[in-house]
Image (tube, rainbow, N blue to C red; front, side, top):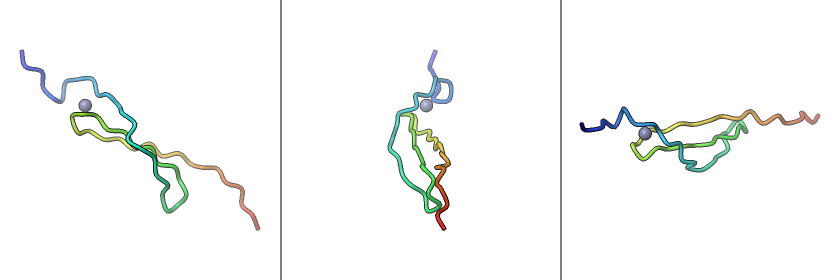
Length: 49
Ligand SMILES: [Zn+2]
């Protein structure tokens, strides 16, 4: 039995965060198999006039 890369349970390792041009918080995750995910958080900012 040889486990395939696509049949393991992905481990979401936090790879860092970034701020998009739109001011959203991007949280990046990677798995050691090379899969990546990005979570986007809408940062609720008050609109100052
Ligand atoms: Zn994986």
